Amino acid sequence: MLVIVGCLIVLGSVFGGFALAGGHLAALYQPLELLMIGGAAVGAFVLGNTGKALKATFKALPKVAQGSRHTKDLYMDLMALLYDLLAKVRKEGLMSIESDIENPAESPIFAHYPNVLADHEAIEFMTDYLRLMVGGNLNAFEIENLMDNEIEIHHQEGEVPVHCIAKLGDSMPAFGIVAAVMGVIHTMASVGLPPSELGILVAQALVGTFLGILLGYGFVGPCAAVLEQKLEESTKMLQCIRMTLLASINGYAPALAVEFGRKALYSTERPNFIELEERVRQAKNK
Image (tube, rainbow, N blue to C red):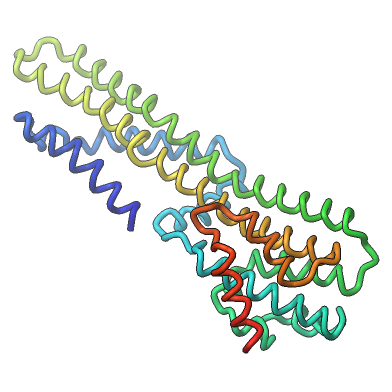
């Protein structure tokens, strides 16, 4: 929704201001300029990226229009889930959660938290390291190193579409200049025309520069920024899981372990101590 609102504000401000200044909106309708700018941008985008990068970018694009799902409620559900799992481990032993982590979709514990279960990256990250805790002989330092490496790889992979779209946005003004130069060349080749017609040709050429700058800084660039922010949010969820599991490995009680995870969250989504304690108490009483 915010993306749509932002686009409307950009369009309304630019085109509305132009109309209020006495400009004719019809003069800005130059499909051939859009063809040159858009076609060159798409071609350069395909030329400058590998197949994997293109696939990752197309997969990430729908996220631009989606609202953020990483809310305080989601994080509270995540920490309540971690508490449930760690409390079961503390009471019945590590082997007691083997069936839960092998098939989370059918686990009665995971079933209580459908919002968390829908996040496949977080569930996979969580179950992988719980599986290592159950069946491995790794110490806390080794598991922490594995977690750090995986989170770093996750972040690097997520940055691929961000960089691709950001570079595309940076190139749009240049392609607008290319379209404008083409228009100027056409104008110079038509110097025999009356001044009124030459003025129209010059205006059409300048539209190319305008469109390139507007598309680059008004739409494509902000889309890259949105994807980068969503990447940071998804990475923060993994860091929350990391802190909680490491605290548990180091011997802290489940209630204290989730407190470690709470401290890893951004202040805008972080529940306070009382809210988390109440949510954990609800998990105890289920």
